[in-house]
Amino acid sequence: MIIEAPPIPAPVQPSRPTPPPRPPATWVPIRSLAARHRDRILSHLLELPAHDRYLRFGFAASDAQMAEYVQRLDFDRDEVLGIFNRRLRLLAMAHLAYLAPEPGQAEHRAEFGVSVAANARGRGYGSRLFDLAVLHARNRGVRTLLIYALRENTPMLRIAHNAGAQVVREGSEAQAVLKLPADSMASHVEQLVETNAAEWDYRLKLQARRIERLRQTLLQIGAQTDAPQDPPS
Image (cartoon, rainbow, N blue to C red; front, side, top):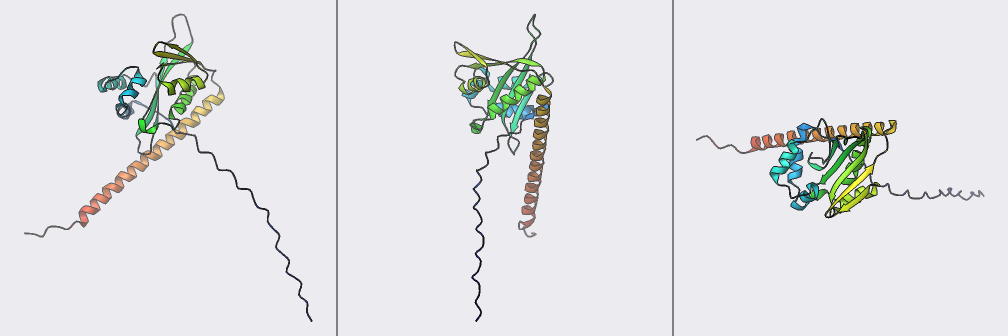
């Protein structure tokens, strides 16, 4: 009689703990804008509701006044930073205006202003633009960043306060003063990485737009070719 040995049970594999979900990506590509982007900048500003224009410029800016502002942008002196969506619509932009030193002082200063499209709120675009503007200003030797805003511009004043700025309120207006640390090798490398990554992102979006336009053109040509032709009379 043959007695078979009982089957050896397979070793129990310890259950692996479920990895925690990855945090959402917080990096947003921000591109430096140039004179060739004036039309996109103007389109972005013209889309701002009346109250947003009031908060951005401190007065109810008309279309003509914003067009004049865009034409006066000095891209050689100042820096303009923008966030584009995949269709290359400008969702948010910041203007970093470099100011001449005050008489008797050698300290370099800059003024920061930002606007975000109404349908792009709540994504942290204003904070991201502010952080990158601070980085650019540091690397340009700026030691004081100024923000002029209306007291009711709570989002802008909150960004300045969270960055450690001293906010002084007077009447309906407020001024935030942020002292910046000196630049370093790390700050220049960080700006270089940000610039290159944003440039590649912009080029990919531009190429995707061109491919999409070509596809739409081919579809239109195909539809015209397949359409029934009228019989000859």
